[in-house]
Every structure is written in C-alpha cells, then in structure tokens.
Image (tube, rainbow, N blue to C red; front, side, top):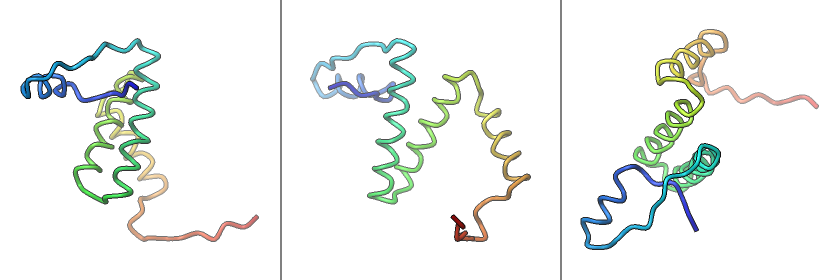
Length: 99
C-alpha cells in the first residue's frame, strides 16, 4: 500500500535508523493521492476534533490548490469572494431543505 506523506517524513524515518521506501508520484498519481489524503485527514479530524488534524486538512487543501495552478493567495481570494457573496457559517443556520 502506498500513501502520500509530508516531505520531511522520509528523513524522520531515516533518523530512526530505518530506510524508507518512497518514490515520486506522477502528476496524475499525485492529484489522486492528494484527494485520498484529504479524505484521510478529514476522517482523522472527525474522530479527534484536534487542531493539528484541522491544520493537516488545510495543508492538503493548499497542496491541491497549488497542483491546480493556484496560490494560497488565490485560494484565500476565492474564499473571501464567497464569504462576501454568501457569508460564512458564524450564524449557525441549519436549513430545512424542501423536497
């Protein structure tokens, strides 16, 4: 089984005296691995509700944006645009959707 890991993980493994088996993903593999990593990190956050897990989600989102050709600033600008148009989630509204 293979999974995407942070850039520093192979060195951390080497520091323990072990030899990591890693390879560089192709472009298509990388995008799919990021998508799977987003699911993984989201599940971890949902189980732990930990700030560190939330930060992991943000890191994956930034990597996805970069892979799509956008910067962190582009992502923030898109977020702000949606916020200005639709608001955020601070009011805690729950909508009963009509079928």
